[in-house]
Length: 115
Image (cartoon, rainbow, N blue to C red; front, side, top):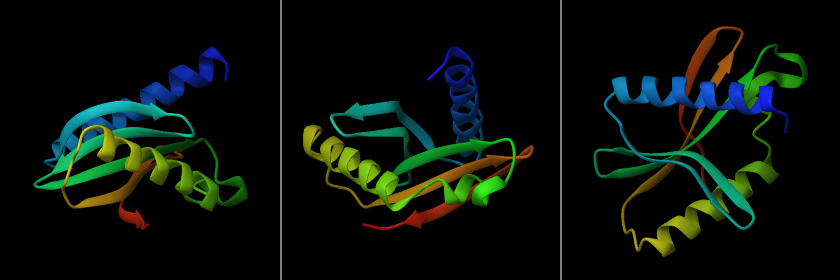
């Protein structure tokens, strides 16, 4: 990943975090990593822990931002979520959301996928 991609990814994550905070969610942590997986944002929506995948695309070629969250990507996010829950002994309802940034638009998909 080059420096430009890293900075645009960080900017997209910041936009998503700011937007979700304005919607009433609270930021728990960013960029949680474990062997085999990563979660861009972990947030709280009331009692629910929300694992958020942020995807930014300049164009909608190949299905756009939503299509880039493949089954393999979902599996890596789920793996990281399970790791987080076990590591911090969290017992709370959870869901997986996605924030899509594409062609200047932001779209929040609640419960974008399930385990």
